[in-house]
Image (cartoon, rainbow, N blue to C red):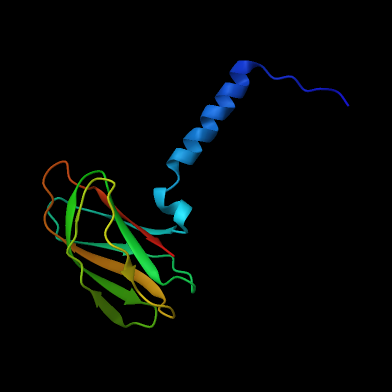
Length: 133
């Protein structure tokens, strides 16, 4: 069998690209979290909705702030059967920080989540990311 030779620069570029992909993965991925939704925050707004791609085995939610800090004041789960469930949330999230894990329980098919938040100051979170496990 012949040997394939690649240059050092090619190997280094491939390694850097691989590291960039790893860095882009959610920090929580190593602990079994799966990204399921995002909500964009409006500086003038007080609520934002995240459509959710839910799987039947999920039972917990994790909400993280992306792009700056935000104070969550509540959350309403919209279930696929048309019912709603209110979650008590009162966390101040730092940029890149996450709220406490929110227990949903098994057998609840979440379709969307409405988040209530205090009007963020300039430079505050632009999005909330939602993960589940």
